Image 1 (cartoon, rainbow, N blue to C red):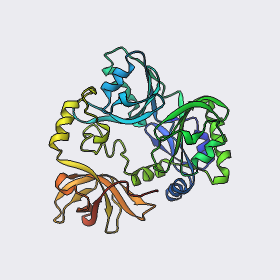
Image 2: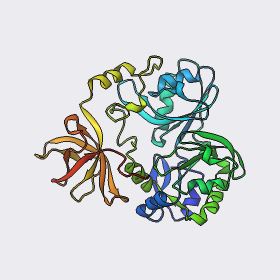
Image 3: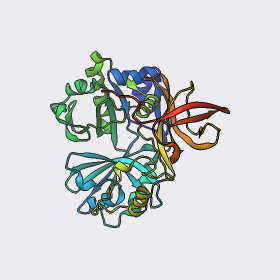
Image 4: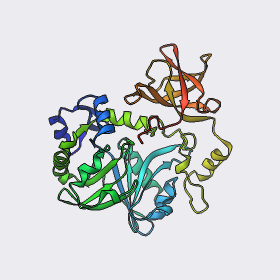
Length: 363
């Protein structure tokens, strides 16, 4: 198993370590619910160094990135990031990821940990324009500092005015005495905050500085368990659960990152355009439990007669709502918001209803 630069720090903090995407990672420290509420109410720190980072450079960098991704990178200004996905040439999704427009002719792609090798091979195989590619995944550490107190904590450690770094933008500057740290206002929790990218050699210095700066705010390390419940409350997709090589971005509700303007030519454009116009047979929807019960990945979804109409892709007990919530693909005739559906749990039909995501409003 691979280890991130923070591995021993996690163990010292009492992290319960598990294998995830080939890495030894902390699933929890003090309990998933407590960690979840720490991020919602104060500030928590996630080690996300297992994520992958690819550089795409050279005069044809933009051409390659535009071809590979459904979103339109021509709309990016330097210092902006964009959520997007790789279509796989068959209507499915290789991965969902972030594009950073770093400088002229230079982009960073941040991909999911479980897909680093697959994504790298895909990017290399599609590079028919001679772009310069670098897989920097093993050299870069990444921390996500999330929660309403994150900005106050991090502001102590940089001269950058973090209030001037809006959502989905980033700067590269000095942080905690370390040069060339990427400070990015992205996140996977819905509670605000930043993600930091830096060299492995600087990991311990940055980590300790953040925890010292955040002590007065009750800062805590957060594991993968709470990362999952936090993203699910926001209705964010998880690759391997809610989207994969067989799911279309249109069916997955990712039409908003699939741009069909004339000058945006990308893999599967025509196929996905037909789906957008003609519709799809099933749609990814959020649902809340009405009956008591927790939906889990793989459970069947049914109508009132017990006929299968879909399946659960993600599910949990929401710490904020104190009820079961989930996402799943349902036949389109059951996809309207407010529709009553049922989750099959050990041969019982538990009532639920289709709702809009996010499940929780944090305003």
